[in-house]
Length: 337
Ligand code: TRP
Image (cartoon, rainbow, N blue to C red; front, top):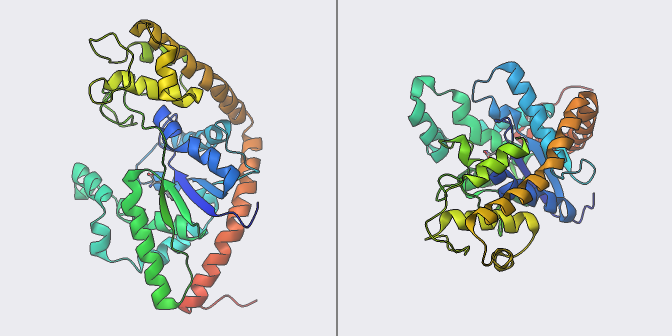
């Protein structure tokens, strides 16, 4: 770890049985690159995932699966700090402090909370969903990162984090850096294969539109071959008129490292059937070893937990320093020696 490097921190929820292609191309692929240039902290935010009631065995499996997939996709526990959020207790502790600095109205204005709570009604909305962005602010502020790589949908949560950072500093003295959202540029926006004008998402209407990286190659090949295209014959990037073909070109280009025009050229004069087979082959070849590695990591759970322990220890060293500074600044009496 080189201390002259800028620090980044991000988190991902373990809420599914697999990451999908959109998670990888939209986020994790950039994380893998960032570990080479930045002092990078990444966590599986299991505490955030508790806002959705999940059967305990499934919850446990998904947390380990998320960590194993991140490693299999290229996060190296030596080159970055990779950990499970609940393993570093300071997250909950700083979250409480931040809750005491956040206005009720301010938290009520978070659009993600408003959307989710409106859908389920106030009696079925847990308080944890309300304080979710404050726990996220604590995740970030504990590590004093300059940048927080996130998708556009997280911008408001980063704004809240910045407000809380400044509020704390002005009340209690300079303590936190002001982190910036690093809205991942140049990352591919991957759309649903069945509804190519909307984002690929785990909450999508049909599983047929989502490529799960832990699915068997045959399943993913079939999904790509049945993806929605258009009535033309030309393989050309045109998001407005040819959303399906453009989406497949994006996927192909991102996984091969080719440009869009090189990708178009690879299929010049070919039909949609050949094109889809070509894309399917690239996707399945790319993720077959990732799936295999993930399963190997899960097979040796003790080994996986050991890798993650190194991460929690590195994270805790930073987090506990920050929390001590925070408590000192606020006049919280330290325990006697
Ligand atoms: N809320 C984020 C999401 O759903 C996940 C998250 C939790 C996060 N804590 C974080 C992202 C800290 C960045 C930094 O994507």
